[in-house]
Image (tube, rainbow, N blue to C red; front, side, top):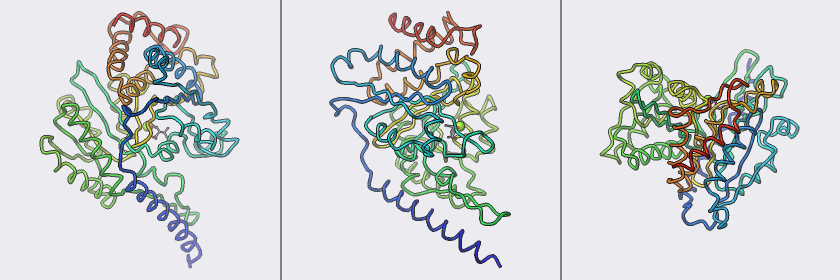
Length: 387
Ligand code: IPM
Ligand code: MG
């Protein structure tokens, strides 16, 4: 009796399969990482986004220009400001990333991006796909790297969240089979998992880390999480100096609040949705999502962003100039490291620590009781001059 509904759903499923198989083929074909040291000029795109995005991104941009002034003069680095990744523009074109914006993004090597509004059901906006998720897919930014550090508590974690597959790959194309039955899809590919697992182990190897932990729910989500875990175990065999263990997401979430156990975690590799959830929890120990930066990289492109949202209410209340820019400045540190300017990255990271935790001449409260983000960035640059 459900023939028609099953037939329609099967057609949609066939289209999903085709898209995912083609994507896996593209990953297979894409072997080499871009070598920044071989480029004559590195182009850094700066994308403000929505809400408080433009205000905080402008400050991170100023700081990068300050640090890379000589490189810009010598023609080795160029900044390219890209407008149009606003919710108004995305909605008017009904595209998560309008075509002309995507074309501009593809002209850059790395991108610094402010937060973008993700519409959800019930919002005044149509329910288009998140610009973040679309950008990760469009530029194949498969690794989402989110470091969390609380030195005085012995916390030093780096999360490698798979960024293009799992429950997100088909997140906007699930199927309402009937009024009563909705089905979403979860995707794991061999190539997609190998590359994130390898990225995590390579990072561990280069940074003197001794343990990589995989987190899944492979005891229940047997097919996709099972495959993810199996591949992580295989890749682990190539790195005999690094210990490997695996945890299920539920107990891992609990262990992050266990002060004795949590200091044992170093590098954590995990599928998209678990990575999304647990990196918010982890960032909370460090002072909240507003303090964490996030790198999204693929073989060709990389994008660096704040991990918090666009806080439209702050803009409505005229408080965007008080929004905390520290998360996007942390993202700028990761950008500098990615393109090979590790000395500048270390200096900026040090300046942030001094301004945020040690000297604290200014504080950001999000309102006129604290400093503006421009004053805070000036403070960072003054501090940089002393380093
Ligand atoms: C993040 C965010 C995004 C995600 C949202 C904005 C779509 O929560 O970057 O963690 O779920 O990936
Ligand atoms: Mg998130």
